Image (tube, rainbow, N blue to C red):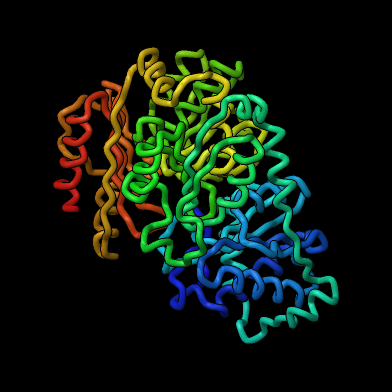
Length: 470
């Protein structure tokens, strides 16, 4: 059956990601759209470079066509934020993207977007699951692809220029042109190469690209921009003295950054840098939104400028909803996704990359220098992250102890409060915190701890390891 996590429906190719399930999901969307009276608006569907992504898009389109719902299919691999942008700009009720984002190459999946270009929230995804559960698979029809095109029920489009023009209008391209910056780009065999390279060359940057060929195995690595997966980019930045190294995950909604010294910037650092830049240098005013597992350094920066930092559960739908509620400047999460006021209502690694490059150009300072300024003004903090695979029995045991019995280990730091908003999060009076929660996109237990000193953060994670038997 179809089951959504925090980042859409994801499944192993050949196991649950198969044609019959893709058609089932498409039929569930058709039934939902008809019930809501929005079928006449049609739906846009895009795809990334994963194995079977294009075919899955076309299979979905054939089901929509059979049901009399027009499907606008993006006829070249495209970034997820482009689909979100199109849904918002054209005031569509729904959009879909065939992708498993940063998951391993054996996975594929589907993300669903709702009006305003937002990630479908839990209510929406539960409704899709309910519609799917009521469908008799033997009655799912599909119209021949060429017949659907001829009938106008499938229309192939490629709205990349609309999306790029929107970003060009939002950043100071002239300042970037004047700065003569050198940028190393790593699309990680994903979909960001054409859009990012187009933007960077338009801004007269000197660009060098690695890992740009089409490889459904992502070079044998996880298509997620981390310190371990970006070693090639780190080497390139150091050896050839680039101003910045930019990487994106498989569908380009997350970003990874290498600074001018060759240091990998944790997504937390990127969020802090951009919020600081937008408030201090661009004069924006407003709050910042983060999830429960994202750095409290954002709280420190917000406090310095007399602003507020809001905490929400994991899942970008919670970020975008809170941002709209409080008109926040920026919102994001420690996994690498962020968006900014006035842009789309979801993650966009391509826009984030251009905003960082604008920051270097307009401030005239290196990224490493700007972050030192932030630490001098707001102090520093250290985060330790641990991931653990689990069996079904282990998940039930940990869930029972943390969330049902609400047990805590013997922690050598004074506790301020405990929250069960999303997982179990303990706040310490020294400003630190630790959270244990299950990933919504991968079979992992995650423990995050942030403390004023590194050794304290490591110590707390080790205490949790022993306590939970991880």
